[in-house]
Amino acid sequence: MTNTEKSPLKIIRPKLPHQLNTLDLSNTIISDRMEWVQSVCEEQEISYVTAEKILFDQMQFRHVTFSQVSFPNAELTDVVFSHCDLSNIDFNESVLHRVRFEHCKIIGMDLTAATLRNIVFQDCAGDYATFRFSNMKQVSFENCSLLKSDFYHSEFTKVEFDRCMLNESQFSGASLKGIDLSNNEFFNLGATLEDLQGCIISPAQAILFTKIFGLVIKE
Image (cartoon, rainbow, N blue to C red; front, side, top):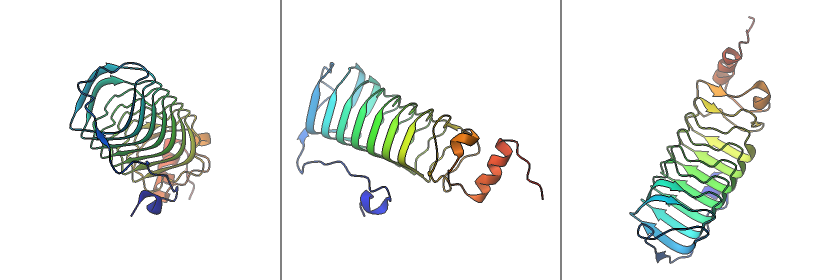
């Protein structure tokens, strides 16, 4: 079953050609504004790189580790990351279109002020990831650990969280109206009553929020 079939968001999958060229980025000197298209990177480590405004177009990364990597203002279109380690990677102010992260470590990933369109995070470890001030449309988080992640003042349009760990995540200033949190797990959430207005929650979560906000239920 495709993601489009199973997701009510009908997220558009990355558009990849049938054949991709093999690319070795581990031995490449990466600098600002470099571009890579229609390629696959496998079993590589990309380390200690800082480059602005790079472009990845129709790319697939499999079992690639990004260590001490900063790619601010990058553009990623039709890209798949599978079983990759992107912990602490900096995609600050980047633009991502039709990108999938499958079984990836995205712990501490920085997507501050990024633009995300048709994005799927599936079975990812994303604790402490930063999405603050990001603009998201057609974005799905599926079975991800997002403990203490930061969505401060993010803008959500057709965003879903499905079976995610959200404990102590920060949603202050981000409207959760229409977002279903009922099958996600958390014991505390950084959000105000205004942020939660129109949010869909379970009965157990409703009781939890009464405790968080110090409300008293009179029998």
